[in-house]
Image (cartoon, rainbow, N blue to C red):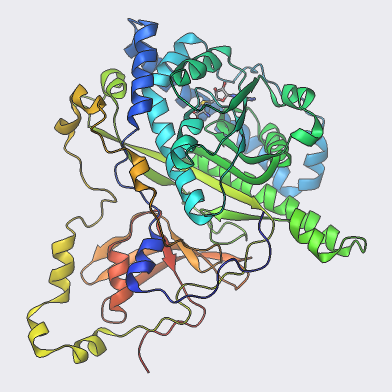
Amino acid sequence: MASLISETSQKIFTSETLRAAAKQSERCLVVPVRLRRAIKKYLREQEDPYMRRKVLRLSQSFSDIKDVNLQLVAETSKELVADPLKSMEQSQRWKIKSAYGDIGLTYRDDETVAYVASRMPSVYSACYRVLSEVRRRLPGFSPTKVLDFGAGTGSAFWAMREVWPKSVEKLNIVEPSQSMQRAGRSLVQDLKNLPLIHGYTSLQALTKEVQKSERQHDLVIASYVLGEIPSLKDRITIVRQLWNLTQDVLVLVEPGTPHGSNIISQMRSHILWMEKRKFRKAKVNKEDSKDLIDLRSGAFIVAPCPHDGRCPLEKSSKYCHFVQRLQRTTSQRAYKRSKGDPLRGFEDEKFSFIAFRRGQRPRDPWPLDGMKFETLKEQRAKRNPEDFEIDYEDLVDAEETSDMIPYEEVDPSAYDSDVMETDNIIDNDEDQEETVNANLGGGWGRIVFPPVRRGRQVHMNICRSTNPDASEGSFDHEVITQTKNPTLHLQARKSFWGDLWPSGRNVTTATS
Ligand SMILES: C[S@@+](CC[C@H](N)C(=O)[O-])C[C@H]1O[C@@H](n2cnc3c(N)ncnc32)[C@H](O)[C@@H]1O
């Protein structure tokens, strides 16, 4: 749990450490060989001759549910925004249905096998990316007790194992579909050091069977499930319950669509609103000491938002989402269809997410505070005559070639063989060595959408905090020019969609 006290002392970044700390995007992910093998084995055991058709049907059903849900949201959200308290009273009377209503998606054997073949590697990759950022931003956090709500076939659990190997000791899953639960168990059967896993068909079943004192989890995750809960009120009721079961961190991941992003934004507003209200109440209650308030009250956002104010993209035409590229697995290449063209060797999984933490956001120093920058003119004036041969711009161009694409293009032919399913693949867990982390203060903005280079300028959209305690934020278009600040210009050129962007409260852009 976080406290008001700053977790890190002020340290001055170099341009290299600044870049390393800001990096959150991952290039093309390779699904770990363990998971690829498990999927392959599971699919072989199913011996399903109609896989292509089933994958197509599953994909169609995702589109259908999206359309119906969009209509529902429009009908109910107005009421909620107008009077949050009133609708909460109403929603408490709602019974959460674990058997689906008319518009819910059921996962029988056909949908399950199609999900494992076509969606699980992509959802795994989005979860891996999100949890990796949680690990970087919260270096001391290593969950032992976890709840995976709507666990499906266990994509989030597989990601957790890669991000925090051997950390999880107890895993509670809530999953109404017996078929999904069976597949999840089958996929992990060859893994060693499994945590103690308990399966429940609904949250009610969990609360009934688990004593109150045992219900807290270090990490609660709900990935790609809230969009399948029929109404906004049900979603809010569920997320409130999930938050009550969270001791430290709650992570929500949804598809990176306007609908998925809207769900994340609504849950964001709700949790923050609820906790702010509780915090204010606790403050006026004379029996609460200040320390107690800090420990148990409040919530802040670990990622992606650099502030806990109103989302600046709310009611705009833009929606907050990110993208993770992955190498397609054998089953994805075999069963997914493309419109006429040969299937690419990679897939871009778009996702929206949020990671909340209990407590108050630490007032950590802002990264550019204390840093001094030179203008291009000043840098040039300091150069030795022999350095004039080297043109700064040429140097950067030699390092990078792509202008607007957030990832390297991957040669699809390189992934067309089962040779990829060997241990020779470099697994993602080689990537664990990280020394510089961005702190949780409001000084690390977020680059949303791909930065665009125009001549010697880089144009970026940045979500940032606008005050020292990160209680408010804005979404700004920023142009970084080489002439004014070559260091930040280089940083911008090396940045991708989803990376952090440093700010300072008193930024010095030139030497005095
Ligand atoms: C798209 S799958 C996602 C599965 C998994 N979380 C993942 O990331 O791969 C959605 C899952 O949510 C489950 N689900 C749907 N409604 C639910 C509810 N009310 N309570 C719990 N799980 C639910 C479904 O059975 C399904 O397994």
